Structure formats: structure tokens, C-alpha cells
Amino acid sequence: MRIKNHPILSFDGRETIPFYFNDKLYYGVEGDTIASALVANNVKALTSSLHLERPRGFYCAIGNCASCNMVVDGEPNVRTCITPLKKDMRVYRQKGRGRLHAKE
Amino acid sequence: MIEKTGIPSKAQVKAEFPTPEELSRPKAVIECYKEIPCNPCETSCPFDAITVGEDINARPQIDFDACTGCGICVYSCPGLAIMVARLKNGEAEMKVPYEFTPLPEKGEIVNVVDRRGDVITEGRVLNVSKSAKQDRTALVHFAVDEKYLYDAISIEVSYGS
Amino acid sequence: MQKSEVVVVGAGPAGLTAAHELLKAGAEVTLIDRNASLGGQLIKQTHKFFGSEKQYAAHRGIDILERLTENLIPYERFHLLSETTVVGFYHDKVLTCLKDDRYFKLQADSVIFATGASEHSIPFENNDLPGVYAAGAVQTLMNEYGIKPGQRVLMVGSGNIGLIVSYQLMQAGVDVAAVLEASERIGGYLVHASKLRRLGVEIRTNMSIKSAIGEAHVEAAEAWRLDEDWQGIEGSEERYDVDTICIAVGLSPLTELLEQAGAEVEYISELGGNVPVLKDYETTIEGVYACGDLANIEEASSAMVEGRIAGIRAAQALDYTVENAEMRLKALDDELVDLRSGPPGDNVRRGLKKMEGLT
Image (cartoon, rainbow over all chains, first blue to last red):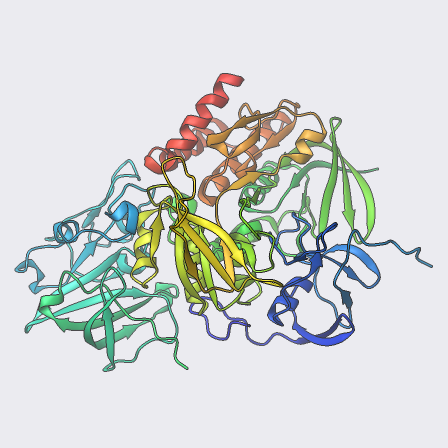
């Protein structure tokens, strides 16, 4: 799903970044947000609706709509469309509102 | 109707063309059918052949006597609404803006499309230019039978394998 | 509490030019943006811009962005806070910011909001399925991150965003099944429509989307014809086999922060909905300004000009001397008049007239 040839832009030479989604190993590239890396891997459902738990994907890609909120490294409601992907991040599809865990 | 489909009528297209006599030399054909705030065609022309005027919303007017068919306006037009046409030896030669990969190669036989995007004939690629000043808008120069003068508008995009 | 003489919220075309004018005049400027990279929506504008040379016409948005950013770098009194979200704004010009999981407050003498706008959705069956994306969001995904949203797209809306993103989808190698337009005419520039049509993409007026089909994600879409009252006509349904549906039906200004502080907001549909009440780009709170899509939904060319005007006005209010201020303001006003005087500017002109009646 990554663009290989583009008449205007070049996306070559970006380093690979490993991360985990629902405990499975995936790869994104340098410059990705969490959401873009997931979409590049054909993962479309990022969160679920609060009551009916319907699958939800990203919508606005500018950190505005909450449709891509996920649990990242234990923290819920992370706006994954504007959060840069980092090596070995552990990302989970969020159910409901998410729970905060006390940090040590 | 262009406002509904994006396709200009044949009469609209013909009205923008110079006469066949004038087309013995290459001339720019501007298909900017509705007023928009834009004038790079005017400011890019080294021969002052194109006039938009004080109100940048006005439709561009071209002086075919002054136009040399150099093609600078073709890649300067943000709407990709200009091409250069010429009649030569029974063929219509056209220089059109092209922003897709891969680019065709000189000598290649390509499918030529009309303003609906339908393939109407085959064309022969005469040249492909992509200099830095064109800023990633390539110019594809191709030839078709002259009967397609008012129909041919671009080449079919091929994404390769 | 940290202080900055001026805070500019939003580093898109309007925010960048506003910051530049203020810095030129000698002010201290903190530019805040929630993204890691500057430019707002310019970062994905791979097409050449319309307008005149004064707004960098015929240059691609991505390259204009570089110029606007480079303008700011030489200034010592320029501070950048990226990946920082402004979450609160109070009438005494205090901003609450969030960066790296930490909240902090910032006191400013003058604040310029250039927060832009967010894309609309529209109601239809299954409109929440993954695969239904805002068109501008898809443009971000493709042109900023180099990722295709899917294999085949149905575009809903034929304004400039719908037309441009459709063309850019084709450039990225994604098939566009059709562009649907609810009204009887194409909304955007006809030159955009024509360049899309010659790629074989059909633009269908008086049509809209009825439903998205699929369980876990979009597998198809159903379109239907609309009657004169914009109601769907039963029996006119057509199915499109697509995995992505793009929604390009307009934008709403992001006025939330201004509203928190009590700045007046009015509904003016021609300007994009709820917009801050402005006089010379100043809100009803003294020393607080708004420009760009936040002030009225328009092209980036106008946003850049508005940012400059707001920046000059704010600098003057802080008693900085702006060289040739009156001449420059007049010239910038003239640029806006030029950009808006044709048919595409009808709406904005009507909206601004209504705004004048309010102040």
C-alpha cells in the first residue's frame, strides 16, 4: 500500500521502524505516524465506537476527530494520526473509552 | 455541458483554436473556460502573447501572431489547461502537460485520449521533456492523424507493471 | 508562567505569514503547532497554485511551504513549539498548552489564531466504516506519508478538494471510480474537472452516496440520484465496487479556542459556518486576531495574504513600526480583492458583507 513511483514526490530511503500492533510485529518507516504505518499495513480498524463497538478507522488525519484513538504503550486515547511512530511501540486497538493506569 | 461533466463542447474547443493556416506553426491553445483568479499563463509568456489583464479572474486572451508555441505556458498553467498544437504533413502534433509515471519514451506508440478520457487513436511520441524549470510537469509531444486535431488532448496513463 | 509577546497558533499558510510579518516588525513570536512538521495543509499540496505571482502562483504548495518556513529561521526572537497542542485559551491571553504529556501555560500580549478548519462528514448508512475517509485526510496519507488509502475510491463532492484529491489519487496509482456531486453543477474549478475527466473519471452531478457496504471495512458503495430537494430517489441506486469512500463536502472553521475565551462567533454559511466576528482581522477580544480558514473557508492563496495583514495589524497594535505599513496593507487588501472578484469568490464576498454588517 506504499506508493512506489510518484511523479512529484519521492518516498525513498526511509528507515524501517519495527512496532507491535495487538502484540504482532509490524514495520513502518521513518516519518510515519502510528496511524499511517497501520494503514500502510492494511490495518483499517483502529478503534471502536463507545457503545456498539463498531469498527472505526481514521477520518481527519489532523488530530481532530478522535476516530483513530488507540492505546499506545499503555496510554489510551492517543491520537495516532498525529503521533509519530517510534521503534518498538506497543499499539492496541482501543475498546470503549480506554482506562488510565497509574504510572509508577 | 462542461459545468456538469468537465467536458467542453466541440464548439467551445474549436473556438479556442487558431485557424489551420496559423497552425502551420506551433501555437498554444488555452482551454480555460471559466473565470478563476489566476494569471501565470500571462506572466510566464516571454512574448507577451497572453493577456489576462488587471482583473486576474478574466479569461486569458491569446495573440496567435505573437505566440511562438514555445510551451512555457503549458507547464506554468496550474490548471494544466494549455497545450501547443501544430499541423504538419497530415498530422496534428501536440505538446501536452503530463504528471504521471512512468513517462513514455520518444518513438513509443501510445494510446491517445479525448476530453472524455476515451482512447480515440494511437499516437507517436515525438519527444518528452522534463527540465528543472518545468518543475515536475513533463511535456509529452506526440503526433496523431490531423483529423483528431480537435479531439486529442492527452495520452492514456499507463502505470507500468 | 512563561511569556511570549506574541503567540501564533497554527503553522499553516496563514500562521506562517502572520509570524513572518510580526518578526519583521521586531516582535517576539512563539509559533505553536500540534504537528511535528510545519505547514498545515501546505505539506500535502503537490499541485501548482493558482492566483498571481504575489501568492507564488505556479509553484507547488509543498515548495511554497519551504519558502514560508525559511523566512522565519533568521529571526532570533522566533520560537517554535511543534508537537504542541493548545488546549485552553482565556480572555486575559493565557494559553494552556500540551507537549510531551506535560501541560504548561503561556502568557501573551497578542495572540493570532490560524487554526484552520476541519472536514465535514455527511450522514449516510454505515458512514462510520473504516474506509470512509475525509478527502483531505487521504491527501495527507498519500502526499505526506506516501501511503495509498486503498485500491479504488469513490469521491463524494466536486469542490476543489474533491477534484484535486481525485487527481492526486490517480497520480499515486489509485483508481477513482467516480466523483459524485449533489448539486447540479461541478463545485470546483472547471480546469480541475477537465483534467480529471480526460483521465476517464466521470463526474456525476445530482448524485450522492446512499450507503457504504461492508462489515469490518468498506467493500462497496451505493450511490443514488437526488431530486430537486436533494432527496435520494428510490430505485436510482447504483453500486460502485470500491474499498475507499472519500468525503469532500466542505470544511468548518476551528473556532473552539476563541470561543473558550468568549470571543464572539457568528454563523455565516458563506464563510463556512461558525466564524469569529472580525474587524480588520481582530476578534471581539482586543489583541486577539484570526486569519486563514478559521476566518473564512477559502484557498491557501488568500490565507497567506490574510496572515500577512493580521500580522501587520498585530505588530502595529503592539507599537512596532511597520515599514510602509499603509501602502503594504492597501496592496494586500487589493490582492484579496483580486483573488475574490471572480465567480469563485461570490460566496466569500457575500459572507464578508454580512460580517461588515455585524461590526
